[in-house]
Image (cartoon, rainbow, N blue to C red; front, side, top):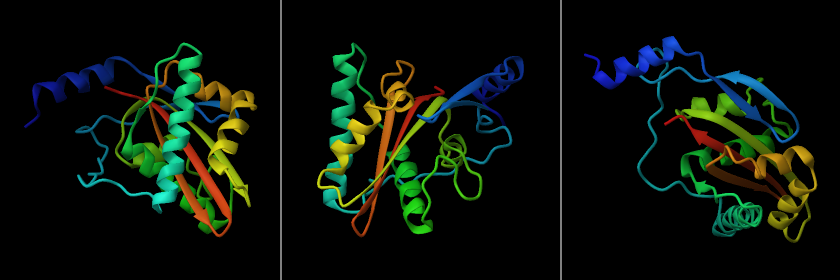
Length: 189
């Protein structure tokens, strides 16, 4: 039996055809919003326990990036981004995938996009964006990532986009190489 909310959401979905803007830091592309839960799309349940970074040192780097990005946003008159651990896990998984499969791209080897990866984690969004960074033999990969993003027009645009309200940072270390993924998002609700 459908709840009143599910019925209203279904009607809203049918009436409007919302579009989500996917911002990759390099170039924007359009993608449709995921189907609403309860319609035809499966929703992946996430465990209630806290999601862990690869190590304590990596968790500190992830926090450092979030903190510096929020400082930059506030310096530019924008609200800070809230940390979203589910989004961070999507970022961690993608950083690990890039390391293990030896590629570096916003598009996964199987053709996945940032929007698809977020959607497949059961996260509904209005808009999503992604910044990537890779460094080898860097003493301070977190600060290098933020500096590099701020010197790149597309990545800088993601950091300073007022539409984003949440972020998730995921880092994976493979030997002396760091893969860093930062996802930005405004939730659907």
